[in-house]
Amino acid sequence: MTEREIRVGIVGCGQIALRSHAPGFVRVPSVRIAAVMDPDAKRAEALRESVAPEAKVFTDYEAMLDSGLDAVSICTPNHLHCSMTLSALGRGLHVLCEKPIAGTLADADRMLAAATEAGRVLQINQSLRYHRLYATMAALVQQGRVGEVQHVRCIRAGSSPPNKGWSPGADWFVSKAAQGGLLLDIGIHMVDVIRWVAGDIVSVQGDVNARTPGMEVPDNVRALMRHADGATSVLELSWTFPAGASGFEIHGTKGKLQVVPGDPSLELTTFDEQGERVVSHPELIDDPADSYASFARAIHGEIESVTPGELGRDALAICQAIADSSEQGQRVALPTYCYQQTVGA
Image (cartoon, rainbow, N blue to C red; front, top):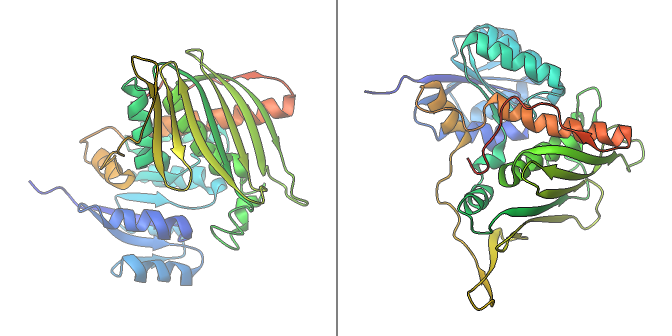
């Protein structure tokens, strides 16, 4: 039996749509990109021509929603995620929303409630859950290759914000009104991965600030986190490091797993029966779950989404706790999660 075609509309035709969402959906046999929408008609037309020549072009979101779609892929600035998701769910459409799920926990909860009421899939594009490197890392931890996780170190730093490098001119990345900033740009990814490999986070000590003159959103983040099973983790993020920096290490009772910078590959350090140091480079998972295929399969009822709205809400809760801790100048307990995630699941 042939799967029913899913007609998807892509909302927002910037870099994330061009580099990820559009080519991602093109690879899924049961999906057809039926519409593209952007207030800038030229940008929408450019996306259509590059990946979906038969798609209709819209500059009005509500009109696109009424054009006969089954789902939308929301690739817009953060402050639009909630309202656009609610509009789509209200029309009975499934939603794949870029991270972060929203700018506030209250908005995230509104989105989750709307998805439940509509009986539709709400998936958040926490894309590192689908990345070969991080999926392999989580699998190795689940297999016990480093023993019990004791500590995680993560640093992600560059010399400029995304509106200078990733997407020149996309100034919403550094706009407070658009709910931009480093914490919800890169932090939302990394706290999710840290939680994936080290377990639920119960408290955080955060230090969040802006170092660039005139910057109205955080461009530097530090956080020390405590996990439910006793592990700790450190997160360091920056848009102001002249030479950049990147690293991820997992320290356990039986060894250490780390990302080899610039490769990317993994290095696993363990010890043999004689106590001799053994270094290996595990093969990466060949075919981890794909966000766009996962979304389609969830719509068809074949699987539960790998990154459902609840998971996106949990990542946002961690980021909010980091910001709150920094503002209060003290360690804070994490808000109640929507659900508990099993390490490595």
